[in-house]
Length: 51
Image (spheres, rainbow, N blue to C red):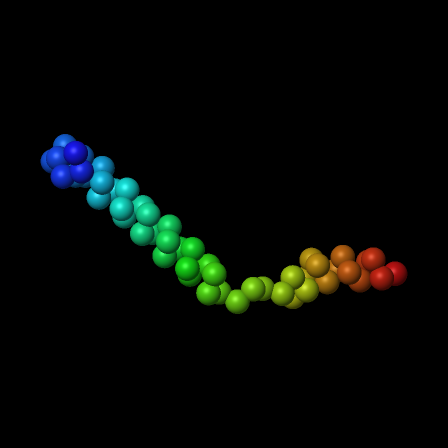
């Protein structure tokens, strides 16, 4: 079934989508986490809550 020519394009598409998702997941996990305190809106809210 897997090597039937009718399903070849479907299998290639599924494999490409899977590879893209795995690469995206690895890329997102390697990015350093952003500090929420660097966001100006968060700083403004923190300043309002301190008062």
